[in-house]
Image (cartoon, rainbow, N blue to C red; front, side, top):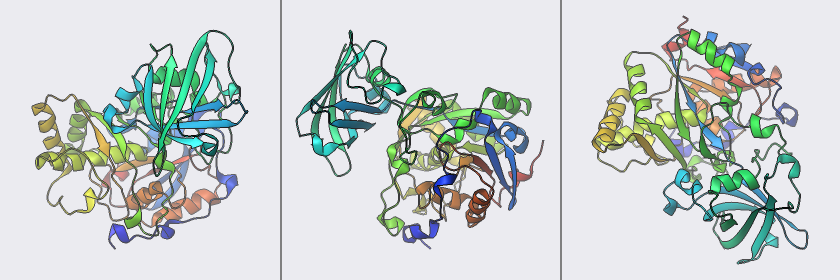
Length: 428
């Protein structure tokens, strides 16, 4: 079957609300870990994950940081307007540059209460010098000398609004403004407002690069204790950046994948990381992606390498992986081509976008192991899991439901090895 003909209804399962984790556990690494290896399922907790990984593996993490992308305004009538900042227009040259804009910025947003906000109307709020915290949600304004923020409704597109935000003092960057005026955006299936604990727990401990509106949740379980145990087993760590957009939560509404438009996300990978990936693959050691965002980034590097070989623009589109251009080209070949391109262009970092859709039938190039949470029915994330372990995704998810695993962002997770992966059997 061609990927475009895949029916999304084939990837449905019943997820009762009581299986969704609405709060994190008190300890990150106490979350349960389902291990799928060689077709067999076993259990442990994340604290012991190093013992389930081959020595000298390379674990790749997404070091993006969630920004406080939700801003609440109150009209003089008392009506509440919520702005959810998604991404900047293309002319800013990427999220990182846009977040450093000072004084004024335009941003694509979702609007809660949009019917109460007229085109061209300006909303305003004041925030005290200390900024807002989770307990302040719903407060109309803070007294004292602080920040003044205004929002102007410019235009509406098919799936978002273009909003101009301006603020004083204008010396603040947009990311600093969000930190003072915004709130952490929890996933839509967590039906509660952000609380104080979310500011810490909805971030990984290694989050560095600001720009996401959702956390790379597989990484939420990792702690310094786990990192120490990984080092003891000579398991290496590397970091990539993919800024997670709200599109990660969008259901596939089309009956088949041919009618679905995959969301585009910004990636940033260092030349050193690509070199380490190539060396790991050359020595036959497994590359383990921590999270679907890391996996999509790593697999995108292969397709970017092919484009470098053909002197094409280095952007990955939705169906690039299914055009039949990869015959005979190994992952090390592709990564080598990418490194040569970067060296010729004196690029220390590769910054671009990916729209890669990984579906059943995808031929995995770089990733041989995957750490991930349990995902929503009929989502592109679940399609990725089905691509990785085949029809056994149903057995894995049925086991998790029957044995009380917690699902979605704050839930438990799994370590998956595909049946054809020889690395899964290595024990140090």
